[in-house]
Amino acid sequence: MSGAPYDVARVRADFPILATQVRGKRLAFLDTAASSQRPLAVLEAVDHYERTSHANVHRGVYQLSQKATDAFEGARERVRRFLNASSTREIIFTRGTTESINLVAQSWGRRLGPGDEILITWMEHHANIVPWQMLCERSGATLKVAPITLRGELDLEAFEALISPRTKLVACTQIANALGTVLPLERMIAAAKRVGALTLVDGAQAVSHQRVDLRALDCDFYAFSSHKLYGPTGLGVLYARESVLREMPPWQGGGDMILTVSFTRTTYAELPYRFEAGTPHIAGAVGLAAAMDYLDGLGLERVQQHEQALLARATRALRAIPGLRIIGEAAHKAGVISFVLENVHPHDLGTILDDEGVAIRTGHHCAMPVMEFFDVPATARASFGCYSDDADVDQLAAALGRAREVFG
Ligand code: PMP
Image 1: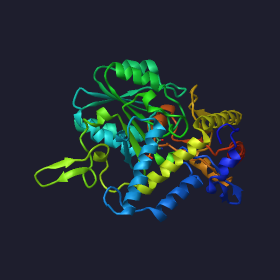
Image 2: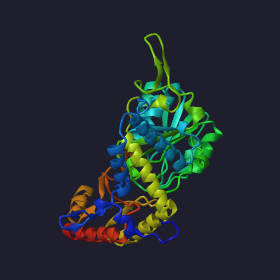
Image 3: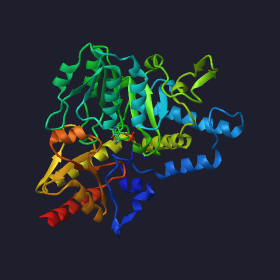
Image 4: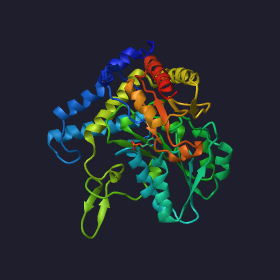
């Protein structure tokens, strides 16, 4: 499709679930930030794998096992290429962003002790807070949190002031899931490097919305989930710089991660297998590779432009609704818009919108510190993907108008 104008109707036709009706109304699916839908290409790739190639990987010499291994390792190479990582040794399959971050906290984190610091930001998802809190409890290290502003942007000066030679890791999101803020990663990573700290980027909300080039970004760890990238659930990726990974102890023990096992001594497998104990989500990896092909076919830059246009349209429409307050008005935002409506609890709002066929997320978005900062119990959040269109935004605005009528 590259070259031609972005044809969202054609993109929508690739996603069978979007034809769903909700109580006789058109579905406006605006919860892509929680989990994206899958295109036919992904459903078919998984189905084809299951019908023709499934067996366990890395074990059998028989043909089917080799086919499955080729499919799985082919997916690893596809991920490497998608992220522009240097080597497949740096690509570890996990269950998702959450597990990827826990892997780093539990393996790399073992070297930390009292006096060491981990620096995160106030707008992290719980997945990039709690593993570090647990690590600090175990190790005696200290968790520092860089503040944000009322617009929902990182206070960069305060962030830089918190960095010191005690900082061993800066862990931050690329795009904040509850606010849509795009973080100034280049400056943050440069600041971390100046004191010799490692950097972990939570790419869960970014990797399917903008081109990610890990060699340009130059972080040490990068985590994301397949299900937010139009791929299957239950699968994620941890990228880790090879030189860092080599120094990390294995975390989960079991099959596939060893070279030899005896009761006197066990030796571990090469990278990346040392970090992949047990049978992996093979069909999931095949689906993720297909999702990456699909997105590259659309052209990530064009998808990003399309989502930015939807964000502008939605921001305009929502600002015109009396009593509506947008939470998170950073200058640089992705296709996520969080808001509260005067006198209406976000959960009630979610229910009314559902009656109108509009699927949005309501709650704390696994970012309770953000809710606390903005002094709201929860927000409603609409988020866009490659298949979102103007009609979705207009349906949202009309449904919000109805909600205002109901709650006066
Ligand atoms: N980080 C961010 C920024 C997220 O948006 C999410 C998912 N909402 C996660 C981490 C956790 O992802 P998962 O549940 O797929 O592990």
